[in-house]
Image 1 (tube, rainbow over the protein chains, first blue to last red):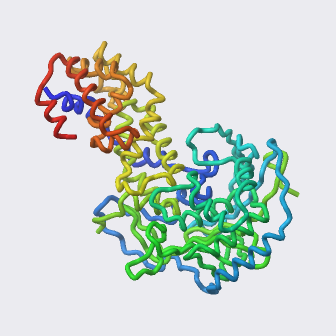
Image 2: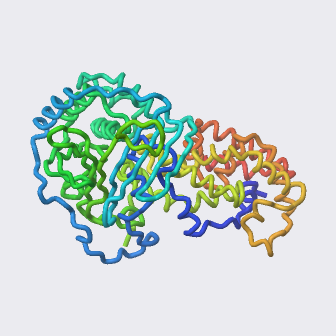
Length: 324
Length: 195
């Protein structure tokens, strides 16, 4: 009698779930609060799944799809001298006015336009996040308001707006020290990730928070970005509101960079942070995929995967209010 | 034809930048994980635990150690914590099975018309043994027996040294065999081989 074998027979008839049942369990957002590692609205992209085509199980032939199903938008985009542009951005950012801190019971408002993959037009999303992080309200397009109470959860990756504001207040404003900090802060460490990629990712996360970066820190961030090898700057990059600005992307040629390349060493995707080309305010994000790609059992088509635009921000006293 | 997809570590690296890729991880591992949770907790809890496991995994993508190509141990580690929240329900089902021969977990997923098959005496003894094991020992035993994880994978899933996996499994199996009313030297040898 083998006890493990016998144990293996217990409830051995348990079935695997149906595809429909499983599909309902996929992570969907925004459920609770923003994810530290990934901008919240990209989660919506994942949930909507519009940019991916399921091609069935392993071993299923990939159907013939036109490679230009979604054209990659590169027209009008011009490479710039990253160092020059980022230094200028730093000088402008440092002159910005300081932003007063909200009270714990106030709400930070954020309105975005988001366009995923094949969406015909951008969709408006509005967030009200209580400054102390205990509640969030949310509205998508013309839909109703959704309210969420947020329980603090140990081990969760996310900081509240108040915690982000506290972190921003403490971060070094010397560019070299700031860069060193974001590369080595254990909070942000992801195994296998190159420190340059991490630095760029952490700055991306900082920019995508409801809480604005203080002017000196913004300036330091631009200077630090200029020091990261592989950071490129392009002019003429368009956000989801149709505004063009400078696009900043990381394409470091180092192991663990997270940058995808084809066999010829050409990047296959590009993820821009977009800034106004005069004020250097953060405008939004843009993600392009230059080639079709198969990820496991799904075919991901070339084209613009995701575009967003931050169109309004502010502090209000109640969820549902719009900053005047 | 797809013969070599990216491994889990590649998918996770990608998903850190491009969340759509997370679907690959879900499609790859959710079916078996769901079955495992179903087997432990029954039909009514399996959906919640699996959804929460992947949501948690999504939130913790940044912490995944991409030196490990297979994410199953990581996912099972997250699931183990969530399953642990339902320990009383899990134990209740083992005890009911031991006492009455009716397995409410099996009934929860079986077609009710043909369910109500009384469990064998051996399965009832086995359920009794599962109910009295310490939570840590039971976790190791079931990850090996039901999730087919290796000792090294169990160690990684639970964040414990591999020596602890061995000693927990040894203890769990000794108690299980005792409950089944006998001991089998070949089983012990097999245990040594697996490690």
